[in-house]
Length: 119
Image 1 (cartoon, helix red, strand yellow):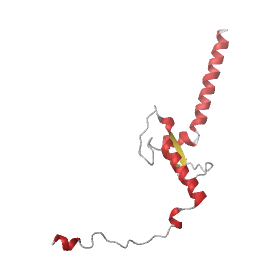
Image 2: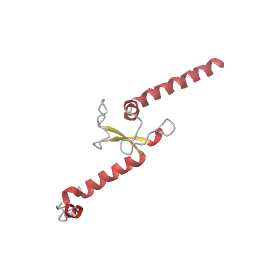
Image 3: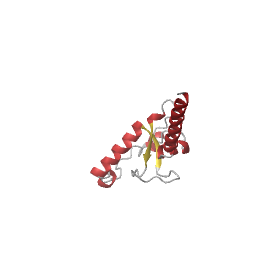
């Protein structure tokens, strides 16, 4: 009976190690090993205690693009990641606001008479 328990325990430990190895091969685990645990937008620092709030953002928004060097990844906190995707969705849906707006040069110079006033 003791041998059966030991075998079951050995199987559980082996399975846990296998799952850990598989998880470490995911892009999240690889990026956490590659980059400091800091949000790329707000610079919030993370520890093991709150690491679940740090996410991997795909810069080109393609989750299948996972180069080995991590060049398509960026660590972002939940809030900045959500904001980044919201901005991306708005850009896709409505277009870039920069290309639609007509930029005009300022016609007023608030410091135009400053030199005369200082004399």
